[in-house]
Length: 82
Length: 305
Image: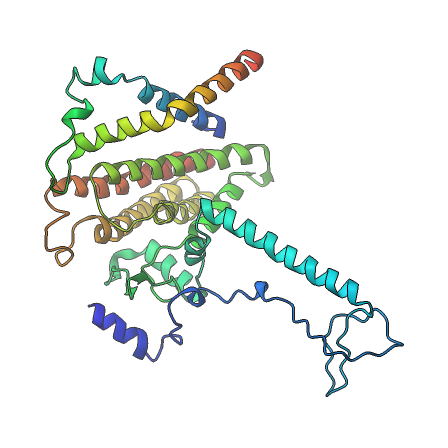
């Protein structure tokens, strides 16, 4: 399995796209992973599920706009160069 | 134990002279000393375009660089512009990665490298695995053999990439780039997975990204040893060396990371680290350790065919 740097970039873009398409109210709340269920108690140690939900929400918030640009560039490049 | 190490730091007769904490612990950076320009007004009319003022004989030194004060002012202006440019470059670079933190990892010396290599290959006799601190900052690798460094992993990483080019007695450089990027990608994957798992389990340790890169780069030492044995002694030697370096590396990783990830008894009175299923942290350390021989085998098996 020989990895090139380009395959790493491709995998990263695909993973971030996958996280970005998880819709908040249509999907995540239905399976109990919505953001309103993550405000737990005020102690320490929020737990894995809460951390994961926070991570998903923050990735979606941060990467939404750059992903538009990156995906457009990828589409154009793949159309041009195969 | 902290007191013991503090005592050791100051009164150990075999230690090097204890440098003060801070930047001068690492190494003296003499490249940024500004050039000394002392123009004392000695003026020899027959002497044009003197060199830099580095010959001081008693009192009759020629200290004016140029006979023309305008050129003198222009040169001072130019050197101040150069200093500003250097400051700007330093500031930009230190926005992305802290150069001081990086310098910490390369402050090694021969004694540390030899001891660390011996620990990596034979960690079963090493007693004290805790990283010593000096007033809340971790000691440099020069003073503490348990501290992670980046010199050994990067050096052995480059050696490994060099080895992948050899096919028998002939050197074929085409595969170098592919193997280099493969190794880099595996390091990135491993560090990302470690960071993700440390974040998800809210482990409040002081393992920075560079520490994780260092710990995952130590497998290159085992890899090179394995490849060498495989090339010298054939396929049997390869498997023996693989088993030996895998066991040593697993032991080393578990003992080193245990100190940092698993909650220590005297750390926190609130029990902050121990309520979220402490066996998950154990799983992380063990999984990291088990991952190493898999990667070693994966990355070196095609070299010893």
